[in-house]
Length: 451
Image 1 (cartoon, rainbow, N blue to C red):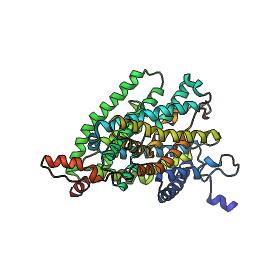
Image 2 (cartoon, rainbow, N blue to C red; image 1 turned 180 degrees about the vertical axis):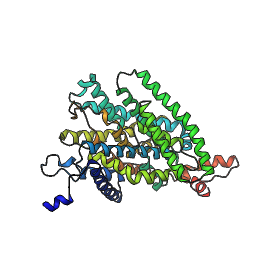
Image 3 (cartoon, rainbow, N blue to C red; image 1 turned 90 degrees about the vertical axis):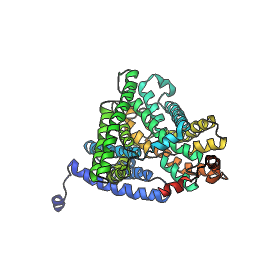
Image 4 (cartoon, one colour; image 1 turned 135 degrees about the vertical axis):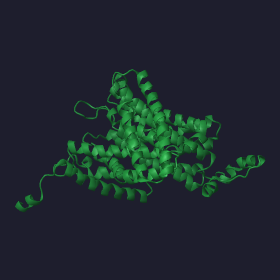
């Protein structure tokens, strides 16, 4: 015991955080790989890693409180790292956004995206109110209303990555419905983040509603105005200093400035600013290079920390069986809401019932954006003065939604595309039109290879 005191003393908060970072990175990456091996998104494994190494499952034990049991000061430090992670995730999403594809998808994809946001938002609000302490009797309580709106906001986002991989595997990525799904999923994420920003702004205090919307409009004026100038500068850098490290550093600096200005000046969620910064730099010569730098600096350290932090910060001390019932309802509403909302929009735009079902099914997948919305809007959860949850905490439900939707999306799409016309048959009408105009029809895959 005497010798042990020579080698071990109670670590300072900073040093304990260093130890936490080591454990989190190892555990989150290991379980992320395991999740991917069994066909699930890595983010599911990373969140579960946080649950397993943190105190969430060991609340009632006297002797053991998890491998990691950080105090309030240490949790604040980890929170900073996690927020940098979610900012990088949305910045990378903005860089990946293909503005030309959004324009190509046009009004149909926009209509599908809007319907796919409004219907889940409304259904999520209803489910959230149903699980408040007094049900819809709490409709006059602003804390309950914003908590329920937050539940709906989480249901709005779509994970385009899972859907794209499934469509590519089925050979339908460039089909008519595939293009609509892709465009709608991109627009969907923008609308979902914007919905969260508006809700959090309205929650902010006694600011009139019209001021909130004015601030949203002014933010986008700022984002596009400053973004246009920055885009010109980065194009110049790309021409004169292609693939230089300074470009990546300046881009990350721009991302952080946009995030700060969005939340601090305009009252918009920081992730909205990060996404807009990425969108402003998408499609330039050095976009791919910048994205690689963001991935190497963000996804290597900060992003796994973000997902694991969600698990570590989970509090099951007041967990009740009703929370599982809520999670099941949340998952059901999340999946049905997208199929009905997006499918109805597809049918309204004169698509067949089968195509409408495919469009709806392609939009049900949720991923890291849903977790980003949860993390950014968690202050909307109704708590008492002691910090205990009074309303609904959808953290477990969000993880369940990601898990089940990631499994069901490929299954539903494969059922929808069973005996579906091949890509060549889908494109035959377009091919004939091009032939009449004296132009050669080149499938997009071949065209991309030529480039």
